[in-house]
Length: 487
Image 1: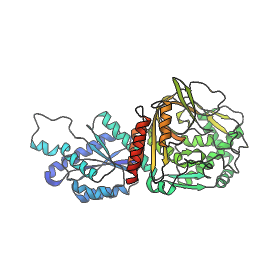
Image 2: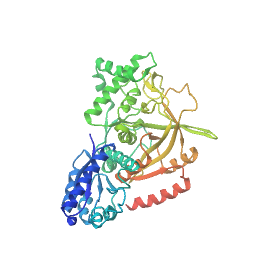
Image 3: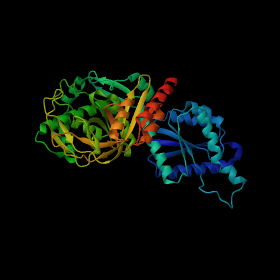
Image 4: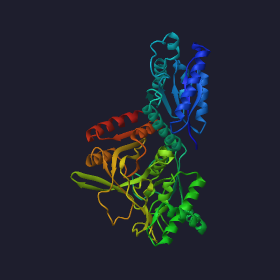
């Protein structure tokens, strides 16, 4: 889907046709110039002067799948009652851009004609009131439209809004059920579909096995060429790698046929298969699909959403799991990995294809997987959990580092990081908030974008930062719990 955003500018007939023509020309110019630097096109739609014009453009936006959101601005004064019918029916993300066409007040030229035309400071306050009065979720961005930092903020919001569009069309394919007796991977699929738009359904592992049996050797040969071009082949067990290719081809066919952007599986349900999909899952994630281990369909969908929000629509976001800690004083780190399935988008160097025994699950062949170390850099980890009656999105700031030891006997992809505000306090905060062991780790998506996404989806957002304490978090969670029960 090629997404765009619509620029809707507010005015009224009071100022006469000449002013309205100027407003329209300037709005079109601004949209054209901004589109050159924003991640998605900004399409000027209308200078709205009546209730009907606003209601009509909102209806059009609601039913246009390519429209990922609207951005409004009031060049002149736009009486806010005319926005009510449109706003109460708006189903797309909404950003109020408080700006003006001119940067400076022209001392020698300013007169009442100038004031009538250039009164965004007046118009945007009237416009902002009605959204506040209607309790609308929105993003307010103020600043001059040609400033780089302002454009960056609009671009960041656009990416979060694309995450909403992807969420509302999300389909998740579950191969089998969740890992038995695990609590946090459970959740209300009906509530999730109503709130986030996700369609989460199950396909039998036998369906996948039947699809695998239909894969041809020629198809496997083609995918093997792709593996060899992108990864170092560090195993002689080529038949094991070819089996992963067979699994990947079959899963991709099923995902694409059903329109699914994410999938989950579990090592407890591999009946009829010879290997848990490792390399297969990793390479699918590299192509933008979301994945969740142990049947975790929530993290599978979130991985796909964050990937779509990232750079070029498939950013560096990946399924992750906290495994173990390094608790040496002054050297506190978390080691994240999974048995097999970590996306190579975060690899610091070219990943290696290796085969090793895996004692968990029904593996007749040693599963092939990509082995690598994650790159350094600032990142976030996020977890979506079902609190019963509402959803909570937990986000923590982290800094990924080069692993401080080689771990030569650990044949998995791994990422090591320092958590904010510190490892132990960060762990206490994460556990206090109910964060899962599965997360999405992202180098591309920011905490502000996740806050924007949560606001657009009308779900709770918790952010663990360098300034968070357990006491302040407990207080915030208590108040949040009360507030959400009243919503």
